[in-house]
Length: 169
Image (tube, rainbow, N blue to C red; front, side):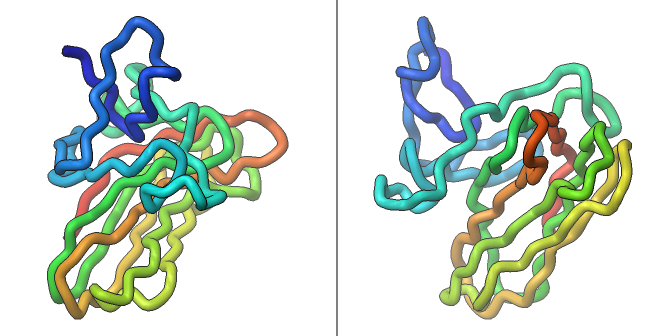
């Protein structure tokens, strides 16, 4: 049985592939835990205006230090859930956006007051046309899950953003 990794949007978007929608932890690349939400929103409901990324894909030509990596071909974001425990927590990710425009790729840790993340934390990649890293950090006061969003913020012209080497502490 074939499985589509990423947001697992459903069989309507993947012709001729048997898609299994999972709500249990799965491994994606170097990530230990990734829990996928429902087909149209970050919180598993259909009431949110924050839709999943349609153009997220595996890219076998880019990557740091070597391929593959995650590619977002247009404006939007890809998300996953990160299991955290009490203490200092940080997530580092490398990104590459070939056109060095003002709207840089970013990482967003979404608010979850049950783990002590009382406001969104955003880390924006610096200006470069090569691989560059950013780190988002917070102090967790409890155990739970945090939504992590990898954003392609390029508006106006289609511009692929590549994401790789996600590491957590």
